[in-house]
Image 1 (tube, rainbow, N blue to C red):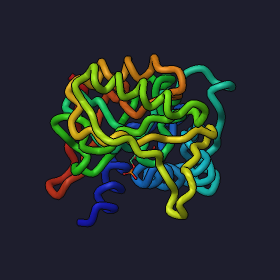
Image 2 (image 1 turned 30 degrees about the vertical axis):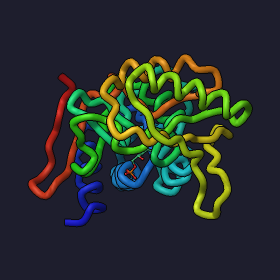
Image 3 (image 1 turned 180 degrees about the horizontal axis):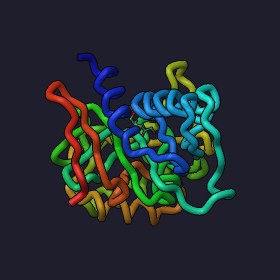
Image 4 (image 1 turned 60 degrees about the vertical axis):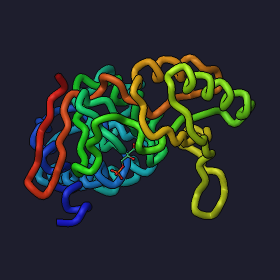
Length: 232
Ligand code: 5RP
């Protein structure tokens, strides 16, 4: 089974947690896109839900699939968010933002009673950090912000190159919020929670891709089937 089929299987499993009338956070990325498509099929069959998309790409997908949308200005809490991840550790801490939507993804996850993360099992790691950590920054004063990020890394015993994310055409990647992303190649982040706090405190850092304590359940699809992991 190829990776894309595994992603779709994980998405299908998460769909089993959706109930009529739910308010849903809709994630971003290729795995979350499967979820949106499968949800759209259920909506066509009569399921009534309302969604908050975590990116303009997901908004367009959801509209195409006939899913009713709202915003966090119009409703209070979400019942459930289903989203992908770039890495998942045994405490269900995550690295997210490979698709550049980490800011809205974190706002939506934090407004949800439950977050289910869906992935193929290659995303499971013992320690976060092999995937470059996305950090969303304000372009103004970038060098100063990067120096402060470097100090935070040093305090947590990690280091590595920081690369401003570019699109395939060579232009700087700009997020839906109009910010840039610095990808930090750290290798291994042993103090993820501590680092998350330090990064959040840096002026110029809008958000970072460490999702600590937000996911409650992970659905990991592999060749042996789907493993469901609940947060300890
Ligand atoms: C987007 C994300 C995605 O969830 C993450 O990059 C995983 O993507 P995919 O499902 O395509 O592997 O965080 O910002």
